[in-house]
Image (tube, rainbow, N blue to C red; front, side, top):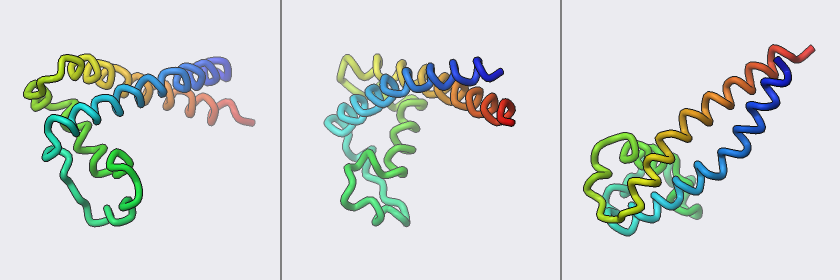
Length: 110
């Protein structure tokens, strides 16, 4: 179980940069084409005033709603579909790998 935990953490660590790259590139496309979709301010958004917009959790949730929704088809950028497919695949895979690694580490601990 410990080996599976370590391998899943390793795979999670290797796939996370690809996920983040896709999210940031899609955020750039979305910000350039449809900035009004990202104009969201939550009640605690003042904590993130000095941080780039992608750092605000409310913007991240809005971005994921666009990725997993149907509105992304309104975008004109040809690479938007590619980044959306990557996010749609990598997010669940990374979550499962992290959960398996965490469970294996907890069960394998003395």
